[in-house]
Structure formats: structure tokens, C-alpha cells
Image 1: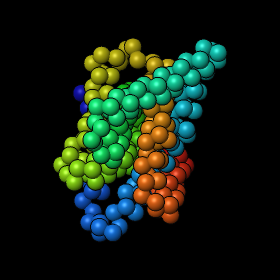
Image 2: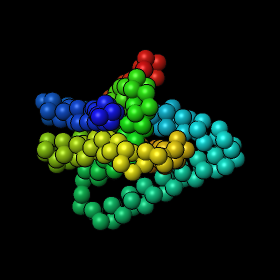
Image 3: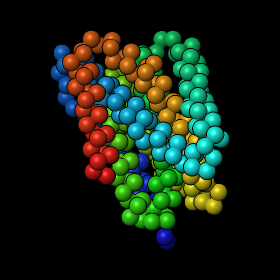
Length: 250
């Protein structure tokens, strides 16, 4: 029964992504839609880049460089580059297969894939840390929950405004959030005795490469299309402030 607590922590952290999707139920006036989309996209841009640069990369590097600096450094660079080239290939394939698909919808799907990959190792990490020390696991779960909510926004808003379907936005966000408890279950059933901090670090660096690439090559150009620079700045600033709160208070 000792797995119930860790599994619950991972599940709550993961499904907090869905909370971000409820933003699509806000009634936005037609003339304000472009401002709202710009605000949400730039907010998620700050979150995705910020998490990668201030959390995933430095924490993973610290783990990998500890035992063998040269090997750890090469492994880290390789993991990030594989993530970058993998998502570039996927973006090209999606663009080729979905020529008539809205760029907003494509962006939402790419965000869903990136965050699904991100949430899986997070679920493993949250579960294993809770399994070893429940207080540490809850602390980690709260931090993950805070950044999962805006990640949910980054999936739901593009999907909703591309399809005009709240159900579709919620479904895609749910799929991403579901990866976290699935990661926790996998951790217990298959990997509890084999997963190392080094392996999780490699996975998270791979995901960081994906998230940074999507942010620079997809989210930022999409945000510029709406020509609402003031709201781009406000959204980005709000994202940075949330990250700072996350780091300083949790």
C-alpha cells in the first residue's frame, strides 16, 4: 500500500496540466482574441524556454557531470542535439502531411507531443522521490504542478482556436497530463530497480532540446503573426515571474 501516496502525488502533478486547459472556457470578445492568443502563446514560450534553461538543463548537467565530466558533457550535448533534430524531423513530417492544417493546430499538437515526453520522466521522478521520501516528493510535485498548468495552456489555446472545440482542447491536454501517472506506474512495475538519475537526466535533456526548438521555431513565429507586441511582452514577463516564484518559493 506504500505506493498509493507516491502514485497520488504523481497523478495530481500530471493532471494539473488539464487545469490550464480550462482557460478555453473564458469568454473572450472577438476583437480581443488575437491579444488573448498572443498573451497565452508568449506566456507558454517563457515557461517552456525557462523550464529548459533553469531547470531541466542545469539539474541534468549537474547529475551527468558529477561522476565523469568529459563523458557527462558529451552525453548531455548529444541528448540535447538528438532532441533538436528529432523534433525538426517531426515538424517537417507534420508540415508535409498536414498542408491544409492550421498552423495553430499543428503548434498545439507539437506542444502536446513535447509535453507528453516531458511529463513521462517527470512522473518517474516524482514517483521515485515520493517512494523514497514523501516530503521530498510532495515538494517536487508542487513545483511540477505549478509549471504544468501553463503548459496546459500552451496545448489548449492553439488547439481550441484552431478547431473551435473545447472538447478537442481538453482531450489533447488530458493526453499530455496522463503521461505523468503512466510514468509513475511504469517506474513501479518495470523500472524501480533499474532507473538511475543519469538515465532520467538524459531523457530530460532530450526533452529540453525539443521544447527549446518548438519555442524558437514554432511558438515565437506564430506569436508574431498576430502583431500584438505589447501582449507578447506581457505574456513573456508573466511567464518569467511565475518561474521565479516557482524557484524561490518551492
